[in-house]
Image 1 (cartoon, rainbow, N blue to C red):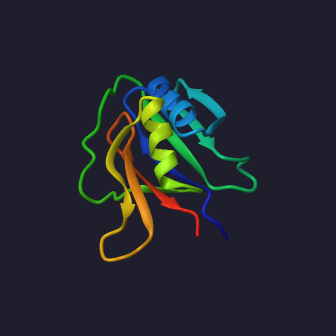
Image 2 (spheres, rainbow, N blue to C red):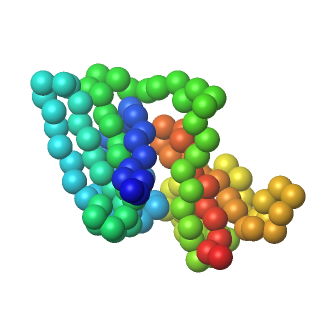
Length: 127
């Protein structure tokens, strides 16, 4: 068994695809419209789905935003250098919501960035 993907509902699919590809460096792996269900799915990641866990973005036609709620935490992405990654993300227009630095009560270097819909992505330094 393995984790296949994490799904997020987004209000503007093209905007979200641009963020995940241009700001976070993922690749758009596939995208498909489902006219009968009035939704579109896009799968993104850092490698093919056969070998990697990916992110599924779901756009329900006509819905431009969601309440994020309090149950969802964040997506975590490992990076070689958190300080360098946050500077690169800022330069590409990303919004850093917690600057790079040691985690609370620990030494692991982390940072947080928000996607266009407000979902949080934690950047964690490579171990």
